[in-house]
Amino acid sequence: MHAAQRDGRLDGTTVVIAGASSGIGRATARAFAAQGARLVLAARRRDMLEDAAAECRRAGGEAIAVPADVTSPSDMRHLLDAATDRFGGVDVWINNAGVGAVGWFEDVPLEAHRRTIETNLLGPLNGAHAVLPHFIDRGRGVLINTNSIGAWVYPPGAVAYAAAKAGLHGMTEALRHEMRRHPGVHVCAIYPYFVDTPGLKHAGNYTGRTLNPRGPMQSPGRIARLMVDLAAHPRRRVPVGLPTLLGRVAYALAPDLVGRAMLAGVEMALARASPGRNGSGNLFGPPEDRMAVRGGGQSLLPVAVGLGAAGLLAAGALAAGRRAT
Image (cartoon, rainbow, N blue to C red; front, side, top):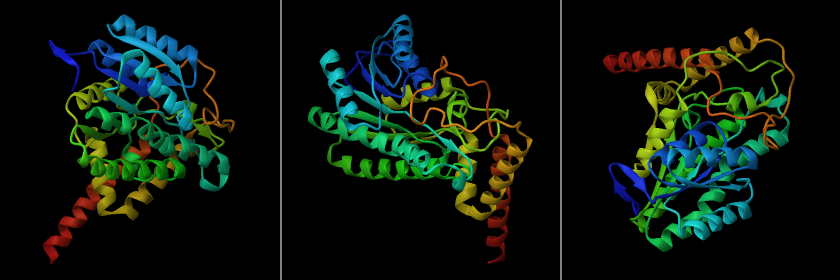
């Protein structure tokens, strides 16, 4: 990496984070700032970006706020220009913006499905298309895509999200193979499980229920620390935590079993949830409330239980099958 590393710090590293106003992105901005990095923060809400940039400056880094929508290719080009104009170049680019639409497929408006895919798949594509020529010209750079367990395990009630994350996995893998032509350019991805962010609270909700189940989740701070480590020591893919590994293995071994377990979990969670109003959330515009890093422990715990049980059953079935042959 081009940055001057002193006492474990990444002084002088210029990091662009698309989707930096809350959740994982905001936690990641703080973590890089604490390492002495220079931050270029992007999201749709200027006021929240300015707050995030001020936090980064207090943490020890330089930071600017650049309002941008990842679904706009011109906004991503402008984001790159703003970074190079201010800091002379980009060392790390993180495609982190994400949205979701929750509900049975036929109940979710088509435009909500499309917007989910535009943000979660075309957004990273737009960011990558803007920055990779810059990295190639400089001969170095790290691109990080924030993916999820949804790249490998496809939950009912979130069809467009699953499609986008599976597509993002394929895009990341193909880009990595292409960038072998440029040894200094790295393409990476991180795959968390459910993370305690405001994401579910702000998602498009077409269930007629309040999306507020509780359960253990991964912390944004943990993901942020992994982002910093991944930028300094690029790796192809980083699954986060045992649930992600179990889910990936379970689905690969017994997709139908896992699918039935997830469906039962989602149905159970919705049946227990209190009635709520449908709405598009942050799909078509930023939320109006004051966003934060954490979301308050929201989770789809029954899905987690189903994944774990399915993983054990699938592993047992595979072992039994091998003994029988």
